[in-house]
Amino acid sequence: MLGCKNAEVASKQTKEMNSYEILYMAEYGGAGEDETRIIETQDDFARYWAEVTHQPALSAAKFDSNQKMIITKSFPSRNSGGNEYKINSIKQTGNTIQVRYTIIPPKDMATMAITNPLMILLVDKVEKPQIEFILE
Image (spheres, helix red, strand yellow):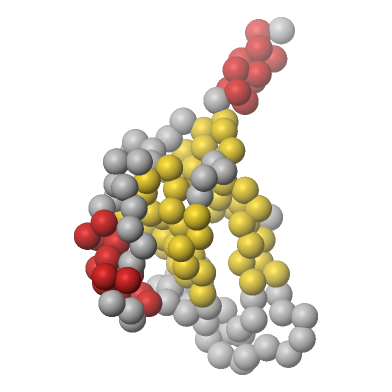
């Protein structure tokens, strides 16, 4: 009985993050390898934004760094284009944020080029965050 009660308490601590925003999702801009970053200040995000999107730093989305943070995810290089990355859910348990996603391959012909997918998310701020991306 005690084991069941502990499992019940732990499951109540997990919450769905409904207030996330996808700021950028593209087949290009990523590092070409599996890499996750946490950006906690507007200045750091503006510099990163300019670096990966080749757009002016001033065009980066504004956010309240006391309430929100940025998560960036570079995926490994792929040998073709046309893949769609879809977020299924984002859940927080303690300081761990799990991003569950799927990759939907193209239905028709696709660009035959090396792509470096990148996803940039704006989420609620978590102290000492641990980020997990889980492919479903």
